[in-house]
Structures are given as C-alpha cells and as structure tokens.
Image (cartoon, rainbow, N blue to C red; front, side, top):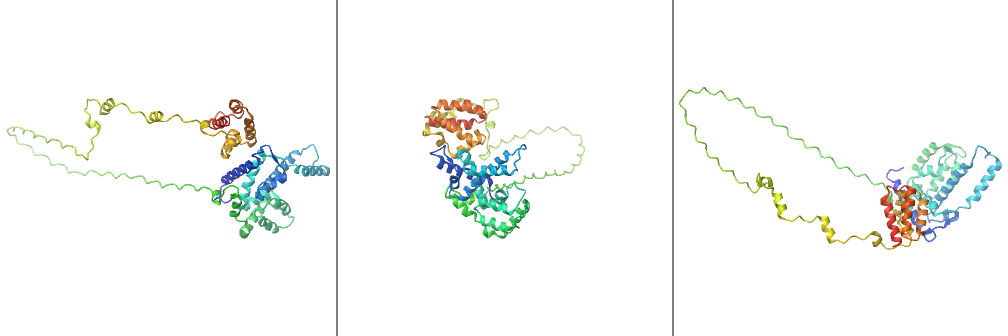
Length: 392
C-alpha cells in the first residue's frame, strides 16, 4: 500500500463519521434497530452501505461454520438444502442496534476510502478474502458488493480464463499489472473524498501520514587547541668564581608601587568585596529586608478559588448528550476495554439513576471493581464530573 497514506487516520475518520451518523439516526431513539433495507440506504454513499452488508454476510458465514459438527452429515443434500433455506430466511430478518452497527459502519467507511487509495489492496480484502485460490466466477459473485472502481475490477475479471481456478498470489500480481496499464479507468480519490466531505469535513491531505521531522545536524565537537611545547632555553654559563672581597652592605629594598585600582570593565565579585572574617553580604541583605512572598502565595491572595467543572459547565439532560465524540472513544478504549456495547449499556443505566450519589456509588463501587479501574483515575474523574453536570 502507498506509504504516504495513513491507515490510522482513515480509521479515526471512520469512527468519527460513524459516531456522527449514528447520533443523527439513533439520537432521539437510542433503542431503535435497523433492518436490511434500512442499512442499504443508511448513508448517501452506496459503497459504504454495501460494505456493511458484506461484513454482515461474512459474520453470518462464520456463524454457519460453527454449526458444523463431526457427529452429523452436513454434506447431505437435505441438510444443505435446509441450511440454505434457513440462511435465506434469516438474512431477511436483519436487526441491528447501535452498539453492534456503529463499528461495522466505521469499518465500511475506512474500507471505502481504501478503495480509492489502493485498488489492489481492496482486491485482496474484498474479492479474494482468505481463499488460497478461487475462480473468476466466484470473484464475480463478490463483485456485487463493490461500487468504487467496479469497472476496473470487472475489466480485469474479463481477462481471466473462465472457470479456471487461480492461486491467490498469481491473481494479485496480475491485477497489479492490469491496474498500471489501465490507470485511466481508476476512479479519482478526490471524487470519493468529496462525497465524504459533504458529511464530515475531509480533504485528501487529511489522509496523508505526517512527515517525520528532519533531525537538526549535530554540531561538530570543538577541537581544543594543540598544546604549545615550551621553548627550550639554553642553560646559562656557569658563574665565575667570585674573588674574596670585603663584604658590601645589602642595598635597601625599593618601595613597592601601590596596586592599580580595578577598572570599571573588571567585575568584582561579592566574595572579593566581603571582608574575610565578616558576615557575608547576602546575609546582611537578608537580615535588613523582609522576605518577599512567593509567586504562588501572591496568586493565592489575589485570586479566588477556581470554580469546579460542575459549577462552570451548564447542566445537561443526559450523559449520552454530554459526552463528546472524542470523549466517548476515550471512555470506550480506556474504561471499557474497547467494548462499544458495554459502554452504551453503562451510560444508558447511569442516565436512569435518580441522583448523583447513587450514580457515583455505582461507578466507584460496581464499575471500578468490574473493569479494574485502579489506574484509571483521570478518566473516572472525568466521568464523575459529567455525572455532577447531569444532576447539578
């Protein structure tokens, strides 16, 4: 996949847009559900809706695989016919609540953006899947879930020998070559981004990976100057032996010139100015003037105590409305181990409690022990402050 695009940014945008669309649909009816036709028209971007349905089919095939048992003959004609009829009946009884639908929608949004960025990766994920080998006819059956670049995929399948099973790696390598030679048939990413931008602001640049900062060049270490070798001084010739003479009186020492006073350009330190045996100057200054109050003490005297979040923030009717989209993802990941359904269940229950005391007690006694929130004080405190806003 092209390294200049970020998977994390696609996933993040998918979660934000899914939450926004679900807020719009389920906001007034949090317990509402979606059936198959409602899923197919949930967003104005048809590819997103189709990818949700494809995920449902994949989950259903997984569940059907779990029904198989070594004790029964699942290859029997009557059994297979009954299972097929059962699948058809159940597929017409889709019933999705928000907690299970929202993650599917977020993934479908992410996959739709991938379709415009890298068709080859979409070919692997959405057409071939986990199969080690497959035939063009089976790939055509999966093609009904694709809208983005559908002519590109269909044109490639037309180049394959009909009913001939091909290996996964061979199909992928041939498709990459086909895309290079048919680049003009690829749907521009800008057109896909424009559809999403109408729902939640998005530009193609928002999907790029952030460039790594260029490291600043390390300055070369300073090379100390080479030591200068001392000059060699020729030894003085030996002094001649003095002739004995009458002792001459030693001349009187010359008076020393007084030391030149320090010029203004030469700083004089406090240590030089302080008498050797006296009290240090800083001690004298400290004794002569009272200690000034610290900055924190000054601010405490001049500024009243800050109001709590519950006092400043306006009251809300429900916790579900008070929690922002980013805050919701933070709670789900940090407090509920990424379980979207458990988060919604807990928030719905907290909204039904009669007062702040009972809600806080439920959080600190029941939920904290159930989810082991011993090291989640920051997020728990945010939840408790939101409870204060609700019951303020």
